[in-house]
Length: 410
Ligand SMILES: [Zn+2]
Ligand SMILES: [Zn+2]
Image (cartoon, rainbow, N blue to C red):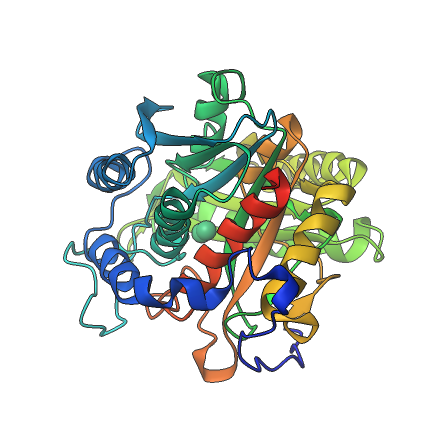
């Protein structure tokens, strides 16, 4: 992992000329309340499309603060709308609300109260930062136009994802925006550090399900069976050659076998085995190559042992492609807020995927990253020890508020 040599030097990088735009200090009084909201959501994690409690919390707060709220968009999605002045411009800001099926081991006082579910990707923090902006914007209304907040379900779900469902239910027709922005926390960078990248930023993520059919039998008589365990082991090793030997070394690609299942006891050769793969790429041609080579290798390997294989290839989230102008604008706003030294304008490509990519296919905009902690504090997302960094709550909220003010004008 690349280390970012940027040290947060505090967040008071404003000049008198931009005092009318939100600065982080404007959110400091709200920080304890935001922390309480984040911890509340963290204690009550909900999996994809089950975010009823979280959605109600979001919708109730928005209404309380004077936003017009539409519930049930794309399942449990919530849209908040606020207008100020007569301006025709509009902006969309998105947060995701779902948790993951992981047993939390963070040991935090606000740890999950539901065994086997956990906010291990920081979506509790994303939701809370956007709520922080909502409260502040409703109070100050220092903008001229329309703001839509898209609180989406099911980012972790895979297709059909929450963003897809909201779009299918007319998100951008019913709640039009000229540009859309989203954020994800970023372990490996200091809190308060913003990371951007124009063009492709995060990979396309596909899913492959493989079933290997052999002939089961007695463990003592292997010659009378076709052992799918051996076939599967061979396939797993063969798959390692796809990226190493077929893909252009200058092109990023990943083939990971995340799940392998066969058999139940030591003295039975099972009938079948299954594999689940995660496949990542940026280039459409590489994506096609991976698809073809995985199928060829799996089928030929299985056949060579007298077994058969079925390969189900599911195209998942597309590449996150940030538009140039909106990303440049978003970088500028971050520089104003936290200073040049806390902004990485050209971050490394990321092999993770994001369903915000679907929103960026419909509207220009930018997906950015906000450091969650480096070194010992840099626990990776989807890890049972992970926790969103509360230091970012006022930072992220102030960023969204300022982005709105700068985008729509006063
Ligand atoms: Zn995640
Ligand atoms: Zn996430």
